[in-house]
Length: 207
Ligand code: TYD
Image (cartoon, rainbow, N blue to C red):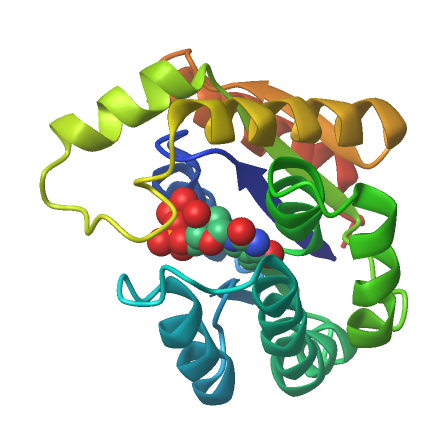
């Protein structure tokens, strides 16, 4: 089973993922936790190039291609082998992030970015995707309060950029109602966690 978590900055998805992994492992499922951009040494190197604060003049298409390149390595080296071995793979971001950030917010077009990514993923899709939906004002305020987290190049984009990201994720959820579950990320961390866990347990194959 391939599960992805998506959403804007400060939506709390990463904290929730950690609790989900702990719960599944406690139930003796074999879980591989990973993230994008990153997840393998080559993909992490590409991540450093993309998120480096010095690279402010990166062309949007370059950015989109680097995310896709990082994803390709991640799919081949980590995700597919783990799925083949019968593991649950949980990824903090995947293809929908490219569709929302590069396709929607950067204006390259959701369909164009989807096409570009087919070369990288060869059609691999998550079984379920949790979209952590939150007003970007609240999300960015959470990050500001959470001084321990590193602020990257994309965090410092204007609020309107993050509003476009949210609108694109909402559009993707509308287009993929079976795969994408919208989570109200303004709720308490525990409520959010319980909802996500229930949705996953509903979908787990019986053992
Ligand atoms: P990260 O520090 O992992 O942020 P977060 O905790 O919000 O997941 O940074 C990843 C950034 O990269 C984030 O701003 C979203 C962006 N991104 C894209 O623009 N396109 C993509 O395809 C992916 C995977 C991430």
